[in-house]
Amino acid sequence: MRFNPKARLDTSRTSGGGGGGGLGGGLGGGRGTRIPIPGGRAGGGIGTVVVLLLFFLLSQCTGIGPQVLGDSGGSSSVGTGTFGGLQATDAGETGDFGSCQTGEDANNDENCALVALENSMTGYWDSQADLEGRFQPEQSVVIFSGQVETGGCGSASSSVGPFYCPADQTIYLDPTFFDSIFEQLGGQDTTFVRAYVLAHEYGHHIQNLLGTMGQVRTQQGPDSDAVRLELQADCYAGMWTAAAEGDGFIQDITDQDISEGISAAKTVGDDHIQSSTTGRVDTSSFTHGSSEQRIAWFRHGMTTPDSIAACDTFRSQNLDQP
Image (cartoon, rainbow, N blue to C red; front, top):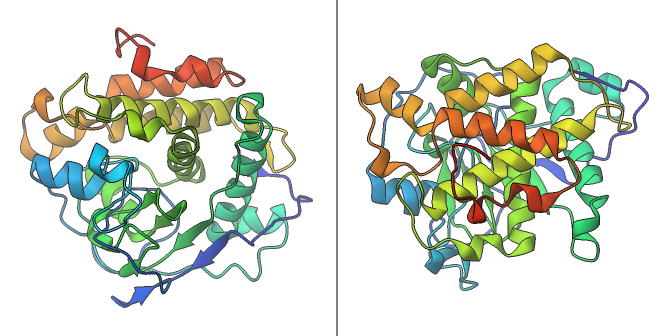
């Protein structure tokens, strides 16, 4: 993946916050969590990958219970994201975006690449006819290290990874999490892998705008609403991927990039994570979908870049075949 070197970057929605175990962002709230977004070079050691208990995984790492997503009180809301049930090291770097001016900067700096990707995704979703009159960008993409306070999803540490917080419409990510996850689960940390996961998180923002999160009732199992929510975000990531090349920010996306994205989707499938960490697969505890499902819905999104309705996983009778 290469960025248009002449593109002008808008850093107004990207910021750094938190670090060294302190609380970043200065935002209040209840308890929080998050989920992975690749992004940047990690520091420190490799954390231990663990599978959390189902209840904790759902209520603390994905936060998609109906009592959370429809609640504006903010006392117990949490975020949604790409992975579930993994843990990483608590070291890393927060972002410095002052030097991110052009696409050439994005080609040479991982933080600037995140800015360019956010700009591309914002432009793409703003152009969707299905969102006319309803679209607004996410409030911010916050890169932090150690621990962070959100504006309604509480505090979160590096142990639960990057996430989207519906309450403050913000994506939070700690780059450390990705090196740990991808290395231990056999994945790659590349520019397009980071793009795939950021696009997935942006997909959660679109779900928030459309009210889709309020449809979540069942929170576990291969056909659960939780899985459908995550597969839909993968489909949205595919939609953006299909339209991104030549959008003014993205100069080219190669077949190798797509292969990396598909590989990333496989890496974060519930079955792959469970098999890698426990040696067995329990479909009754699925929260994000199998590797093949995540690949299938990402690919499906790539075939329908102008149709949000085509990604309606909640009406799908067979999640294995979009």
